[in-house]
Amino acid sequence: MNTRFLIGGLLALGLVLCSAGVSAGEVRDGDDLLNRPTDRTYDRIIESGYLKVGVYKDFPPYSFEQDGEPRGIDVELGKRIARELGVDFRVHWIVPDEALSDDLRNNVWKGHYLDKQRLADVMMRVPYDKAYAYKQDSTGEYVNEQVHMFGPYQRETWQIAYDPSQLDSVQTVAVFQYHPIGVEIDTLPDFYLTSGLRGRMRDQVRHYRDVEEAFKAMREGDVSAVMAMRSEIDFELGRPENRAFRLAETGFPGIGKQFWDVGMAVRNNHRQLGYALEGIVDKLVKSGDMDRLFAGLGLRYGVPDYYREFLKPEALARASGSD
Image 1 (spheres, helix red, strand yellow):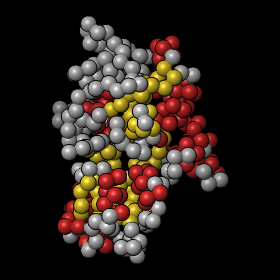
Image 2: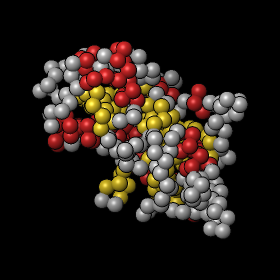
Image 3: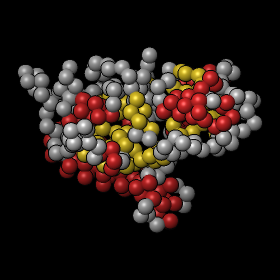
């Protein structure tokens, strides 16, 4: 079973522990004898001439490999951040563990036990949420004490795409009591649709390895719709073979968080690096460059709620590309 890490309403899903292999283009730092990673502070990163950006593997449109090269919105943002720092971009592929806290430990502050030398300087696509950042375990210890989460750069949400040859419209999820809908297995849409409306949609839910496979099933007429994160849906609708499909306008009652902010994470004692990266992202958001970065990949951009709380209407319009 192919599982990947998805952030949706702060739900970390990933059921298979994989080894921390190093792919082409990655940098492996550290002491070979002690198997200890180098403490790459801001000054050492600048001196080294490169920034290691941690992104999830096989997770389009956020981060994936195409023709041997890293692609996706998180990759492009990482390249832009590195360029603004005046250093080269180096990819650090992240294979999801069982929970986000495991991914942060393995890739940001401690390292995987199989290869502790392999750490990212910064990790992308981390939930920007104070409740999660200060989450405590059963003993009262802070789960994420070793990491600093900052720099919200996108507001993500859920989306349904449907086949107009099978459905006239999708005004409510209740229609999926009678029409099959595809989801990636073991994701929040899977749990939501199988448990929502007191389980009345359960029999119509079809499970697939990933969103791409779910869209293939819709092209073949096996399902009438697909539910996933908005950027995933946008990415698939940008493919020529999926142009006939449409975006649904329905909300998702009872799903918990309809929207959530996505940001970055660094090791807790690397705050100087975090402040520098935060300043770069802040300028990209406010100038509208972040919106243009997403548009260049055919994705709709959502300004994080963090900015919606204090930006004036004209500034918010510029950030969202609607000025």
